[in-house]
Length: 162
Image (cartoon, rainbow, N blue to C red; front, side, top):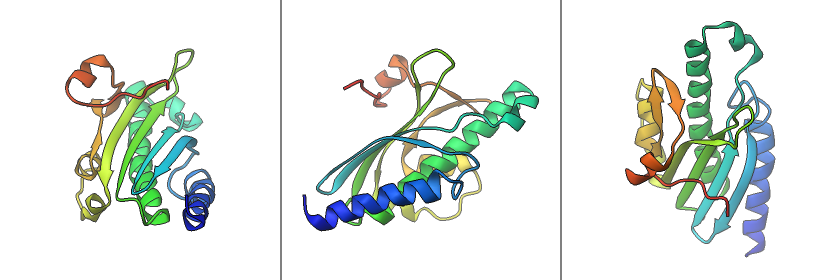
């Protein structure tokens, strides 16, 4: 790995801490699980934010929709941050998980994006904008449904334990 690449990867992690983790993109932090860089390809996995305490007073479907909206904003923000920080990367695999109470994390967003996909202009629907960027996810009344084996059969990749 070239020294320039190591510096760029360090910039990505530092910007993650300031722009993503400390509210530049979202109201609450995202936890970076893994970032891997190979030539012109990268992979990035993270945990989506937990629902805000003030959302707990909302009806459950409304609070879930708010958390899902924040996760979609986070996915778009993370993809932009990665491509901005690592100019050599032209394609990246992204995965976002949601931590369940006492269960392993659920995969809620995945996508293989190309740098060119970020040129999507203004689309009013956040979900449609995320889909046009290349993200895959399932929503039921605006709330994420975990991507499981059934969705994998539809061609959506799953997060592996490896």
